[in-house]
Image (cartoon, rainbow, N blue to C red; front, side, top):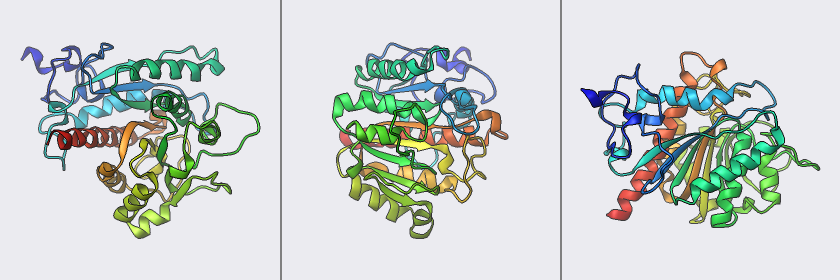
Length: 318
């Protein structure tokens, strides 16, 4: 029984989900080994515990820690529901730990995030990031665009995050406006899903309101996403406030009327028709959570992303 706990310390040879008590042990994401040796690694989980650009309730600096702890509930014995495989028998995944920065120099932090993301991406691994507030996506996209050119964004969110500014600020509500202006994003082939907050300008982004998802359904939503994105390099950014506060109370800017957990899970499961090159999940704020509801939702959605990526590997091998 020596290897029955603390699988996060067992190294790269750890394969499969295995079994470990959900209430004990080192809480890496999905019990994956902690490592910064990325040789032969397919997916890198990385935390960015930053929340200095929130405009409402803070606390998502604790998001990566909360998600990791809740992930023990979706990474034990039997494998993920719906998928007919164990993703960790297909992919080698490590938890890289968290981005380190000095909060005393807030304007320098985006550059620190960008440089560390760039160093991870050199390995060729798929970068799966846990926020932190949504601003962290900007420097990650900047690093991704250096590899792929202008990125198609699939943003699942209550807010557009494209508020226009004459002066560039580091803010979680305007970073996609700047990313589009700077050529990091290709708004013509980007889409925002689940929106339910006012912004008079789209800045060229395709927008699907939450009413579209509720009334037209997941299949029609996926059809629109595939139509807009095509086969271009696409980045998935999931703001947990896309979920209704009933399913995700622990977030900085909750908006009623959002997606249910099953709608969000179904959306991710059906994204196999797009060319994902990276993904993140942001804005989980454990101080405003209850009974780990939001952290568990975040961990579950990240597991769905991992399985989606693993399913692509399986298809390529087939």
